[in-house]
Length: 110
Length: 114
View 1: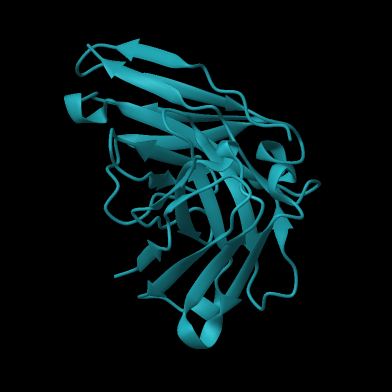
View 2: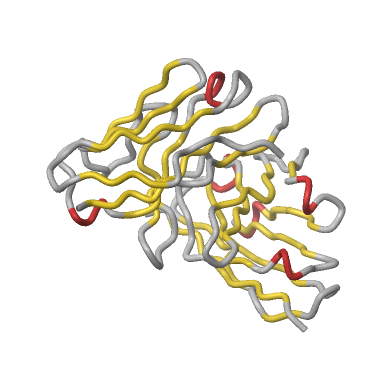
């Protein structure tokens, strides 16, 4: 089954801003928006954002999501060392009736 | 506080079967779509199956269709995944996930090996 496209890795410096992208199609990201998940080494994923820019309680305002057409983005401002993790996007594909995931982006904070 | 706890993972031989369970609390389980998502060692996340509220329909990734069955028991706030004809490619941590990927359990490890 098809999936979403994410860059495998992004590196940024401490206190800088990182923007991660996630490209799908008109049946998934373009229709339903994306959710963004953070997975630190050895831990289960944690939801950062859903339906483009709704943050669950407890998620820092440094994390913001947006969408333009079939591409979703996650922007992390004021990078901290604890932001170093794998970031996944996912969306419900209304045509496939399936959740599709991106391959994940490993964020390195230098 | 929303909690989901998976159980049932084990080491099983190729061709074998396993039933995973997930017990949920802290939210109205009967009104929530529920999913299983897996992660093979060192790999990314892969959606496995979803069951909407009511359980009238079920959805699966192509690779498990005909082998896995997702089900729910709303009276017990529980989600299940019956896995048959297991292959080494099914080796992964299996996560129980609520709604729109909102809450994740710690996962349960399924290892398929001879």
